[in-house]
Length: 360
Image (cartoon, rainbow, N blue to C red; front, side):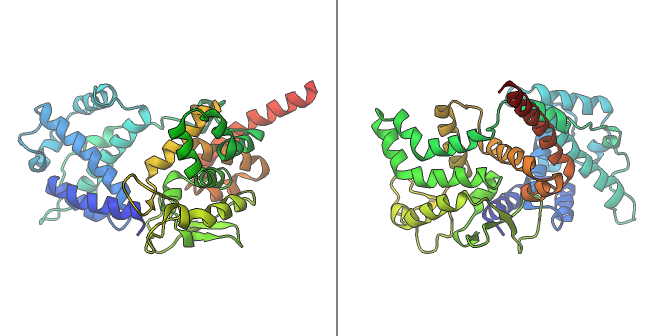
């Protein structure tokens, strides 16, 4: 089991006992089919919902794990609509349409299980009335809409090489007067350039980069082995190819990894960092990987870039040279509908390229 899933499984085991018994029953039912990470998201969504029930006086219970099934049966559509409004407007963290739909979908899954699958001792459904069956969850974004939001926010063609070059050497000139920033850059530039180069030549997700181990790399075949999102098989890693352009960056980084970061012999992580006060390098966190991309992006003049937008940048460039299904396989999308976004993005890219050619 990869590191993220191990951590999420521990967190899931910690949180589930604070849930009502029927939610614990649902989580155990789903455990063989869904990853611990997905189930942990379910539990977090249920915590928000149950806390809201208690705060609104819609439950007879005083604590979350004692909310009875009967309280769920008595819910009206008005209550569901009020919960939807709460998610959209709550002060602590207002949610967008996609997040709201995901939380409502989590509730629909629970209510469906309780009303259609789970039974009591007399073989009757645990939940006699399912208000969530009436809730229609519309898809918040179509591929075309998502593509429109990404236009102008990705690296295109020569910008990909320019950004990699900037991380390798250009950043140094922009922080030349800042001794602390310059020291950190000199220490980590080979590693950082390797991370950026690999993402822009493979389309890996941040979680996949984070989970990479040294022995996951096959330089001869130009591929890395990763745990793919959505696949709950912890015994199999998916081979993902990277372009020839990434080989030198990986080679350069591996040549300095041990001496520069001094990881313990048992540390398998490909990308490591030396934390303050530590004598041995440890696996970089996902947040650290995200932050290093943002740091370089801001100085490069593209402050909206993130690891995910680097992935989109690769995918758009890759799709220009391949078909939809090859792009889907390379990115690890479960459905070709998700990959359709790059068809819309490349339509615009090709249109602009034709215009440039006519102007010249």
